[in-house]
Image (cartoon, rainbow, N blue to C red; front, side):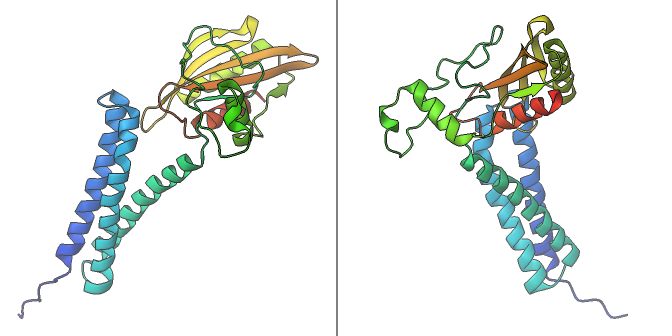
Length: 250
């Protein structure tokens, strides 16, 4: 029986798949290391562009093996899909981060933000807010600039008014936070006060949040504030966390 010719493209296809799997493994190690404290969350985030480059190489190599060598096709397609999925996930996160305002303190009440009583607020929460290239911003005080940038970035971030009592609001928010796996630091239903720490699932970024529920005719007004523990920007995380708490108490 005649021997089948060696399939020349299969080596490239396997190389592409191994490269894509290596990139995926590196992303997993980066996330695990940030969660375990082997390196900082920001350090893990800084490693993602390099991983995206490796994944992009796997994508191109898989595409080349599939289109030009036309061999090892299933392996090449698997490498292409895995690589492009990883590149897409990293690129999506990068794009979302570039669109977020450079803020670490985000709140539904700019005039009298809810106050932390147990968690420590970082002293540089507003000093790193950049000066936008707009008339008049350079002359603003840090507090005024923070409010102005915040208003531009989150015009729809408002308090929630609900028919529930402050105690019920705190109970609902606490259940929601525990369901998310966040750490409840302090809960005082009688005073409508809740403090908690949310840790991002992938890179372990920590954000401290405080909820304030004040009695109003017919129910409660609920304000939420969040402060990122590290970095010069929360990358839009806190607004999303506030939205999830608001949804829980509506």
